[in-house]
Amino acid sequence: MDQVPKQLQPQQLAGLQALSRQLISQLELKQQLADLQQPQQENQGLENELPQVDQELLDFLENGCVGLHCVDSNGIILWANQAELDLLGYNAQEYIGHHIAEFYPEQEVIEDILARLTAKETLKNYEARLLCKDGSIRHVLINSNALWKNGKFVHTRCFTRDITEWKRIQEERDRFFDLSIDLLCIAGFDGYFKRLSPSFTSTLGYTEAELTSTTFFRASDCQPSTGRPGWSSSSAR
Image 1 (cartoon, rainbow, N blue to C red):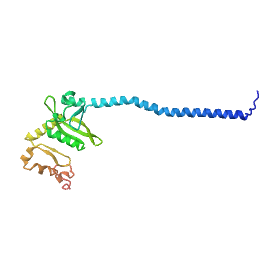
Image 2 (cartoon, one colour):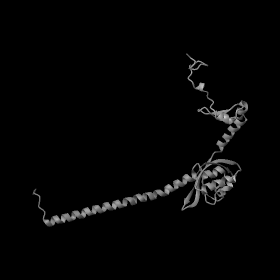
Image 3 (cartoon, helix red, strand yellow):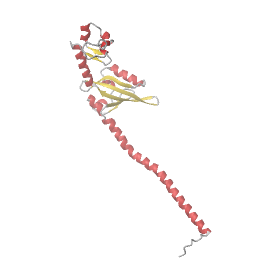
């Protein structure tokens, strides 16, 4: 067998070069098409995921454990989730589509809320009372602001948190303080009274302001002790 490489003729060399260029062009074209198809595939994947994301967001709003509702610029309830309906005992038809003021026993409170939201304020932990279907009252904290588009009030975004049980405990504590004949107080580590029962002032003769504005520590109470009752470090020699 002839092991000597054959010398290509100029025409053969030109043909091989042309074929190589065509092959390279085809490979480059395939790569360009692949690069174009990848974003399309990624976008298609995102489009396929969007309905699932929308469904999950809707489920989060509808079935979350905190009450939510939206009110338009006229005070009409546009939407409320199940937690809010359960909190007050209404069904959707009895709540949605009604004016929000129907569910506030104090009209001045809802008027103040709507006025603040219309003035583009954000409400944080605004305490209010709401009227339940059975006539009972729920104490709530409201966190709300409004969605605005092109300077126009669209609707509120309101979170309603039930604090009825906390208010009940607070009222029981207040009643216990107010009616007790014993001297009751709440004191801080800073040495000041935070709260005093009325029996404190009636027994000691000081006003509540006088007692809460003065520390109940004495300077001698803060001196190091020698371990012997009635002795301070300055007297032990």
